[in-house]
Image (cartoon, rainbow, N blue to C red; front, side):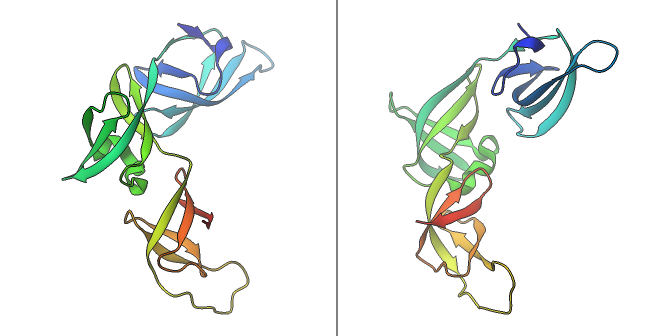
Length: 185
């Protein structure tokens, strides 16, 4: 068990029977009454973020989160196959568990798989990935004041906004957290 006085960013706790990770917290002492802890929590399975307040001294159960290196092999009928980098054992993961990460999965990509109490709850991609542009319309300069962008399709099939000078076949860096163009590779 852990108290609100021991909160820190990245701590994994059980709140109302659901697994959360603390992403922000602030101790607040109002004029009268006891201190409270304002907290932003990210749901470990669903990914949503909520804000909660807890009374000072409340206690929570800590969660055991483990990470393992795996390599993405291939997609087969809505399921994704990974290989453990140590044991060479293969596992099949349904796309529901992976969420938005499937937009950036390339064959032979090494990822961290995240386990909660020995149950796979998701994967963590590298923050910046180099991707090839599969399809891009030619850029048309118009009368614009600010940066112009266009839609381009990556090798994985997901579409993102890129600057006009990016052409089909170019390699670009993409932020996998936001799905946004970073720079030309």
